[in-house]
Image (cartoon, rainbow over all chains, first blue to last red; front, side, top):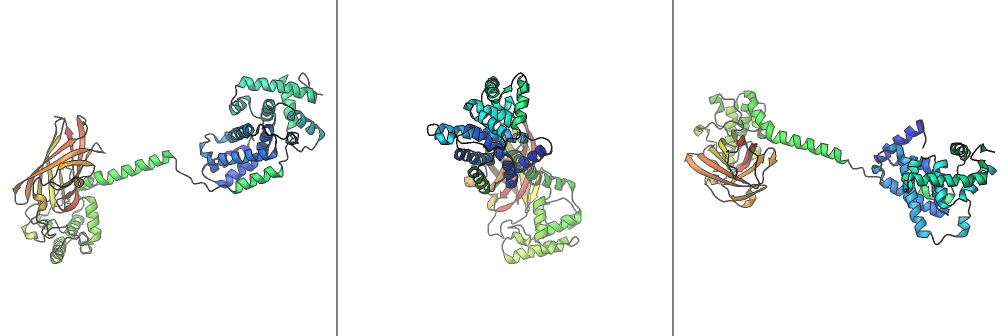
Length: 180
Length: 302
């Protein structure tokens, strides 16, 4: 979640959206769309599924904006809706994942290193990948991730720990001494 | 060690922003464009506040303000003008009294409805006579003329001063109710009252003192929110501690003289009442006469 002026603007937009201001809601989604796609892509295997999940999440969020009590947690709240939607789609489509979709590149990166990171993250098991995306890419706390995924904080920590080991091996980032 | 890895890795991924594929971007745009305009409903808190405010205003206007108006004893000129508009109070000028004879709502209505009385603060007797004559010639009651229905113009015979709106006495439309006693014995509330009226009430409306017949039974629909066994043509609501009382009501009248009656109201509440409570009797109709008579009293269990 952004900090400073951006965060204040977001809180204002959330309050406006809660009062029925559609433009404010559009601004909030536009600001969060990249993040939404990243989270969705961490769970789902195809862009079409991501589009479905994001679309449903937007509609649900718009409908239930009034239920958000703390405007500063809008992104966390939206992400949770998205994860639930992704899980629902994943559950329905688990048996029909085309291999070519699975191997599809999720991100277009602008440098070799970024491609390397993306590949490393993509190669992680689903349960690790989601945690990594939320923790490293979306900068969420372990507590928030635990709430969002509805798993204990200890489980988040252990998944992160195991993900770290694999990432460090692939990316040659040493746990002991930072980057090579 | 983990912290170092985390810091390093976060730093590396910071610049990674996935390009959103067109299929997703278009879907997001379409979804946002198709969002319906949201209907904003007030939160329950606001609704409660508005409801409470409305209730307070209603109670104030309905029950408190009329009594306060009577207590405060408005300027004589204004009252006389109002009385003249109503054409129902007899020769107030002769008596020189300033007691209010009508509740606030009625007074206001009459003042605005009757052109004869507008701005006339000194010749109220003349205005009253004019108003009464209008009724006589019309031969019927008409509130828009500022005349109480069924009241004749024979002001010379008025012997009763039908005044007072102090809670114990209520007067409107030429009928005065005087609360004498109110006793609650744990089962029923027994109220003794007197009723006085101007002569020949209802004759102008073609109804001859129908309301004065004691214990004539009216249909249940006569009373609002109450179950009625037998009523002497009274439409009355009972409010106890600001809450409408569900009850059975009987009203009995006994003639005491010309246009004078003593009455008894027996109220049997559906449920028990407190040891001590404030009671409001709100009469909307007496016989065929529609008006407003408010009697208030504090009742203790005896």
